Amino acid sequence: MIKINYENHLKDRNFNIEDEYKKIFTEKFNIKYERKIRNEFLNTTGKYQFTNEKTKSLEEIFDTFQVNKISEFDSIYENRNLDDILILSTKDIILSLQKNGKKSNLSQLKYFFNYTKFQKEITKFFTNNFNFTTCFYCNKDFINNFQKEKNELISTFQLDHFYDKGTYPYLALSFYNLIPSCPTCNSSKVKGSKDTFKNDSQIGNFDNETCIIPNNENFNFHQKVKFKLFLSDSCKNLYIKDKEDITIPLRENYSDEYSKYIEVFKLNDRYEVNKDIVFEMIQKAELYPESRLKELENLTGIPYQQIKKDIFNLIDENEDLSKKPFSKLIVDISKELGLQ
Image 1 (cartoon, one colour):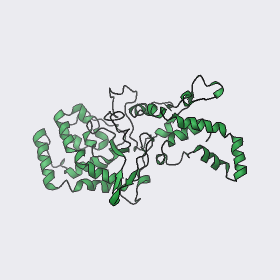
Image 2 (cartoon, one colour):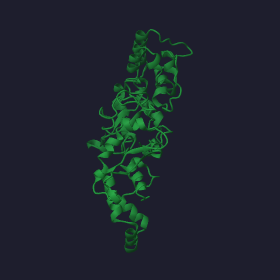
Image 3 (spheres, helix red, strand yellow):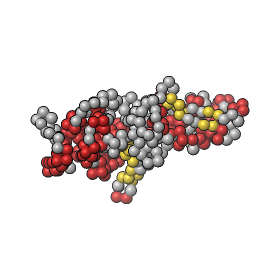
Image 4 (spheres, helix red, strand yellow):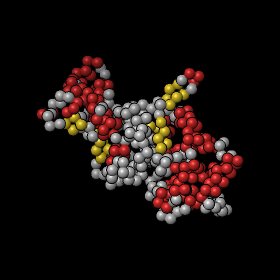
């Protein structure tokens, strides 16, 4: 829901994310370990030939998948064997293995890009170097770090594989495939292992089957999708008695680019239980019309816009919406109510 700008959350603005992330894997991939995995890989597949022009060390292969940004998946190769897949850029590999690779190859890639082996170090990397505030998927829950005894930092976020590591094992260690999220979004009851790239029978069919990852430069959920306020038929003359008189669905104008995203994260269902936030805004709008706000300005000397912002907890759309829970909801509904 909220676009990720990693630089905004860095503790040290001079920190080189990609270079430092690669160091997690450098020590484990020494010559002995590399030879062991390579031999097991060769023995199982029987087809991966390291010719001079295609030979890559595991470090080089990992470089491709660790830190390449996962951009638009507009190049799906029809006839690729495992040799080719391992030397392709991240942009080119989605679906190519599933369409043409053998199950044994898929199994080997899961071993090759084993997230469990590095999970502790990866989590520590995110915890020590970033200050995240709210879940980027839902913008409902905090995902802060807190300090335990002995200055140990504890993270409350989980790292979700946006493209499920079971289906896309070659992205299991990719920095840009690990999205800091709340436990609810990452749970089996919400996103779980649903396929965000192609049709998943668990969630139905959509005209646009590909979800855009929140760190993609083209991710513009906030601009394209808005919370809308609808009143029940019982609300005569716009008089709203109860929060159950309203609904606040997310609506996208002129496209369905994010319909699957909304369904995967159950955003409409989950926000319905937070209608009290909107109902409170409506009640305040009735208690503090423009004339009352101007009276308060005259009485206190506080500027009108500041009084309005304080009373309604308004958020500037240009602010970083990831810094506060429910910020998108507040921005969208305040516009619906004419408060912004």
